[in-house]
Image 1 (cartoon, rainbow, N blue to C red):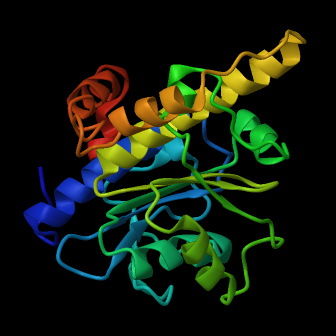
Image 2 (cartoon, helix red, strand yellow):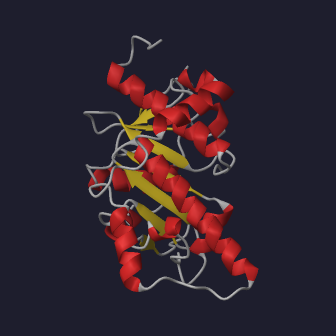
Amino acid sequence: MRPAAFSAEEWQTRVDLAACYRLVAHFGMSDLIYNHITARIPGTDLLLINPYGLMYEEITASSLLTIDLDGQIVRNADPQYGINAAGYVIHSAVHAHRPDVHCVIHTHTRAGMAVSAMKCGLLPLSQTSMRFYRIAYHDYESVALELDERERLVRDLGSHDAMILRNHGLLTAGPSIAQAFNTLYWLEMACKVQVDVLNSGQDIQLPPEHILEKTWHLYQPHVRRPFGEMEWPAMLRLLDRRDPSYRN
């Protein structure tokens, strides 16, 4: 049941964001208490973010903190938890400069970090990888604590929905939580495929460029459909079967 303190729109965003945290943990993409998934409260410039200290599998709709674009906490259900400054720098940069973005996800997965350290970047080794044939890159500038890095983060992301942070990890951004999660899931899969292929020691075969361009084009949301929306109800059913407490 929705608490009276929240509008219907904000509560739905909270439920979906809590679900996203649980899903990232379920699929092995979390990093203890670190990293972040943020979502914009509809009709505002306020963001929802995880309490710094909870694991992703502990996140609930009501436990999420509300912050403004300057990183100031507006609402906090449990004052013993604050926010991680590094997460605020990265996420606020994207939300402030991309009004089309509703959700931002940043991860430090094993495969994502491995590919982020490869000079070749993400290779179009599989159909899944070709979805990211045109992906953004941002060079490593140490732990993201300096506010002036935000300008370069946004510049490098451009209009893309996915970016590899060199020597760091992965970032996805989407107009909905469902779409951002879907992009992350398949980007992570593409990174796993690359690590497996390169580890095999076999010669690599890549399709010709016109096929890569065609495949990338077919993955664009305006060509077929916004990937993630159709899948989202199934993701929620998965969580509800396992542990529906994310809805609290």
